[in-house]
Image (cartoon, rainbow, N blue to C red; front, side):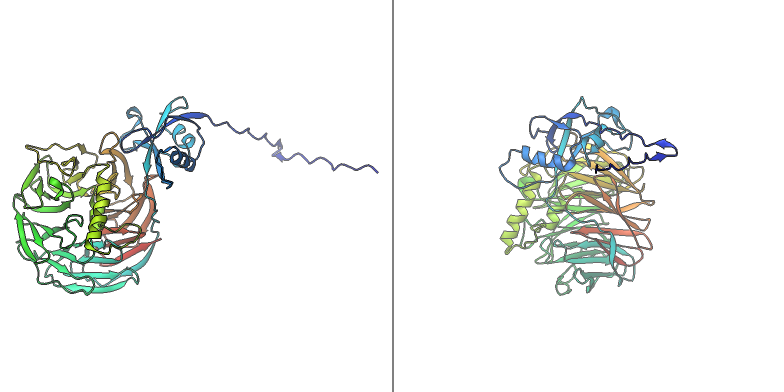
Length: 527
């Protein structure tokens, strides 16, 4: 008996119309790609012909194979293509980040600036070998302060947290248990700034009473009496870097009285005072380079100047007079490595002061070998200036007026804060115009080039902090929110509402974010 074939399938109809023929797969074009180092623009390898639909992960594998280094370590990369000047729009990103593939991100870009006939110059930026997870939830709301929280700072290892408040107290919090550790009482006015010694042995605080105090974070006890000398309130504190002085680092304090005082923390005596400014000194930073590598002090003042001093004896090296209004914020591209000293993502602790000094010097040298120590100053004149005052660690003092590398414009109101990313490649500035602006300081092409504006806040942005891998930025605002920004998309990655009033301070360590403000609570955010 013959086998009967099944009857043919009925033709599927869509409203009486036969099913359309499936579209043939569109062939992806090939493009010629030149991979270059983002830092100095040098080619990584000769130009290669690639399918345009190769995924970003494939580009990363290819670049790791093309590199001529002998080590087998896989380095993660971020890729972008710079938009030509004629294709950029005001306040729009000046680069195209490759997050999916060249075909989807570059060739299909709305600017239509590139075609498959072009040789695409793809800039490769090495990323951290570790990745920080974005915070998405509030893991603890810590109450205890009875007045607004004005400053918050994680210790260099990220194990402890210090907060200062208008209730005249500094509080220490244990981040393992998320509970109060110690209450440090001694100031008679608002606590305006707290700063950790880079080896986590001491905590310094400055207050509205004009006093600088040192504390033992293990016991919560004061280390001697207050260091008195300022006639008005203390605005900022800065520790001497570990690679310059690991055993007894000095401490610099700036004040509304127009002076900066440098204290010996071993004797709690004044070493010298800097008295060149004619108005309030708003910020002091202790840099790691300068003359013969002995360190320099940078001070910003309401007299519209930034002054640079030799940290050995307080000799004035430069006066930078380009701003037209009060200079309220400073940032160094070495801030992160100076703040964390010998501690990195591996979690290893040095066994001695000499070991700590060697590790800290190694981290500092690795950063400044790419780009010398850069300074950004932000002002109430709505602008920022980028400076490179010491091209090498053995720089000599220059005479006359030092010119800035570039002027960073775009903010519509006063600049409230500026911060460099831990790898020194990016700078972010926050303003009273509710915007955060991103600048490229990697050394490829024009230093200080505008990259993107991060919009989302509906009130002035007070404070910024970077994740340790330089992939995320967190901002605190008057609108009572904390926002985490993704620097691949320049969009909000996590919106962290929860505060009931203005958020004055924020800090980021490992995968933890801390914020505090006018509602008198400390919030810790985690993944």
